[in-house]
Length: 239
Length: 362
Image (cartoon, each protein chain N blue to C red):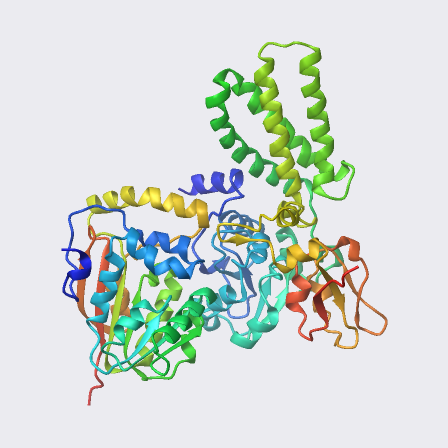
């Protein structure tokens, strides 16, 4: 059974040690047309699987904000349940690709995209979303930017709103960290040489989500403990 | 790791070497201390911290993907967005009372002072080009002397490029020894060191205004040595010839890109490649860019003096002193021949007076 046939919403810990491909993102970002397809191929469907499980956590009819929407692949999946998605991306080519998707999949009115980085989130209205999602974006940001993005995510959510983040994290045990470092090294070196881009595994994603004011409701680890899907909830106002 | 990064940053400075972005304290800064902005190239930050010993200031390290200020600004790694993001997410606004940042003027091709102000409310001051001048500049009320606005290519900068070019050349050579045999290792190391150090250190005195012309002299000398191997038979003549040819080609490439390595000369390699039809490698493109088209004469830098509002932006950021203010307080292009097509004036001109229009066909 291939990953595409699996039921959505579940990231099981796998025993295989196939190089995980999100490092390739940097290489492919300049070519959005083939981005999703190549990402999916090199990750053996894994990226798609992750996006599917993120989408599966979104409540029906929700208004969703996506941090770093890329070509809009996740947004399109989220829209099978959500009522609307607002996405932004810092890469002009990605925004262009996402706008093409809006045309091709007739999503206009339900999926809006703007060109900005997380630093532009302070322009979004307070308490205007029911969920904030992001996959494989925070690991490309600096700790300051992550703190800012999660803080803003908290601000723009309605009380009780959800945050769902899937990203590369630092494995918890020394052995796993070493294994992760070794398997990751060739890909890192290649990425460095070709594009000078880098990603930084997040030391404590759940902790950062908690520090932003959320109560963490779940953390699913996978891919040799090097990947996490963290869900949090903005506390409902008391009194 | 720090030692490794220091060595890597020095010997392989042509490759990115990132250091964490964010706000750092230099000395013990307070709410009125100046805020300096720089890139996140490890070597730059290390040297900056050393140059500013004894100064109390905030250092805001913006994301340039580990590339130095000038290259990153030209390649759009250091952009308005990276500075805006650093200002907004670092919390620097809570640490100081003022809203003025000091930017390195070599970042002007990438960072628009106008747009930084629009998006953050922070005013931009252009600091001195060389970091060694910063303590004096800070102590004397943020006034730059004329030479501090201009890029130079002094012997330390040239030694930097020489070392930074030499070691990748040695790496390339490692592949060559598979073919040539290890007995030539010493002569290869010596020849590499000699060629690069000679070329970069002698560079200002080699005839010609462009890197490609300058390197021809050195390649000529190597060519004579090549011819001599037939006249005076030497042991391993074949291998020495191969080595000389490799050195000539590599020097030609580096010489051609001298303008890309020094902030005082235009690139020769990019416009040449664009003319040959090789417009891009990977995600790095030069064909069709304003810079390359300026260099290839497809565009011309010009000013509509009626639109000039006399803000001095161009004269303040040009590392070559191309722009001057005329008697009517509007900019004039005083030294077009010195222009390196870095685009700093184009990016900073807020009135739309400076443009790079497609050249009229002759």
